[in-house]
Image (cartoon, rainbow, N blue to C red):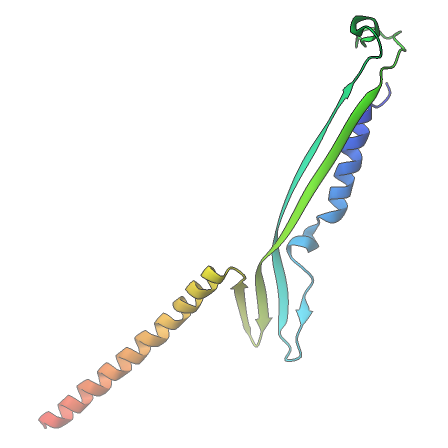
Length: 144
């Protein structure tokens, strides 16, 4: 049995998508900086695919209609079809590896501010504890 034209459209479109989207699209190629750190881009990939088609008869529909059960039916009707795809690649983060550390730096500004705040909280807590110890020690010295 011969391949239906819509199958060819779908096959060609899917092969093109396969060529465009691979693992290296999501986790990009590493880039080494002058100080020895390695930066690896991480992206979000979204894609959509659509195809469709129809067969049209030239004259009376009942006369030219193809019957799947009729193996002797060699009459062809015109076919019209189309297929398409859309792909978006959006960077979401950069993984920075070097100096014995690994850090994930998100591209989203809101997340970056939150991460900076979370990194800052322990520093503030330690600073407050050290000041409290100094104050407690100076009070004890004044009592003696």
